[in-house]
Amino acid sequence: MIEQTARLAVDLAAVRANVRAVSTGTRAAVMAVVKADGFGHGAVPVARAALDAGATWLGVTSAAEALRLRQAGIEAPVLSWLHPIETDFEPLIRREVDLGVSTVAHLRRIAVAAETAGRAVRVHLKADTGLARNGATADDWPDLVAWAAKLAAEGWLTVTGVWSHLAAADVPGDRLTDLQLAAFRDAVAAVRAAGLRPELLHVANSAATLTRPDTHFDLCRVGLALYGVEPVAGRRHGLRPAMTLTTSVINVKRAPAGTGVSYRHEYTVRRPSTLALLPVGYADGLPRTAEGRAHVWLAGQRCPIVGRITMDQCVVDAGGLPVAIGDPVTVFGPGDEGEPTAADWATWAGTNPHEILTGAGARAERTWVGA
Ligand SMILES: *Cc1c(COP(=O)(O)O)cnc(C)c1O
Image (cartoon, helix red, strand yellow):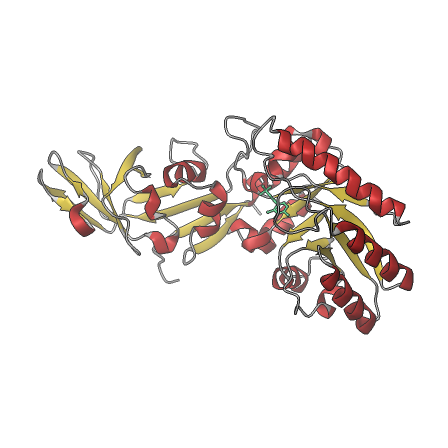
């Protein structure tokens, strides 16, 4: 095996425990959202672990992601929801992938593809209840519902679900969630009034699943919590981070006071110190916006990354610690020993943990443990 500079270990036992932790708080079914290659954890192994622990649905954004799950032999219900209008829907329909639909244009193309495939397609109509991203607005909803009812009557389409996505579920008590729920109920009423009988209503993401039972309906779409990151700041639900990013020291030097470090010398060593070089940088998902705040776990301590994070490398000021070439370094992990977590990195970088997880280890060697 060729030695890699960055190593990414995914703990599938943690994924299973997180599914169970989430499931205890709801009677709704759990959809494991494995988009973006399972938030960087590997969509197929994560999907298998989540199904093993009781999740019954899988969620992805794209046709490619959905078909990859089917090609891996995963037969569980899959919902895919972000499709360019020119998408070839036939393979998705043949492989029994449910489709999220937000526009009449998509609905009509999907119905044609179903007829060509000779098989009815299951769609989940998406309402925009206040996020202003995907979904049909209240103005466009009647037209989408009328078309769905017409195409359903022709037999090539079943309206399996009605759904929406929340804009501020991670802010407890935010009134926007109440407004969105009210708008969602109106959208569902319109679907029922058109004679359709959707089996699955769903709006909850991780934050809503853990903090707002009134959003659960029939199905909770869980992403972040599956990977063990608490979705609501300051709240603990016993989740366990699944991803650990490690590397090792590849060079060590003694630096006298006054040594300028990395491009433009944005950091200067104040007292004689040991500098450790790590072969990971922003191309491995360590954001430059974390400069000046980021730490790694080295020699049993949190040590600061100093100076600029570069594409492939960064420098750690290990102070007076005894550090040697080859010493192991944890960039982030579950936090058991005091090492930083992905959530810490998100704080340092001024972003959300999702961006840290999906950006981590684009070129790391991934291994899965606890299968
Ligand atoms: C990503 C996504 C989710 C999962 O959100 P988390 O906050 O990660 O739980 C749920 N629903 C939709 C539509 C999404 O795009």
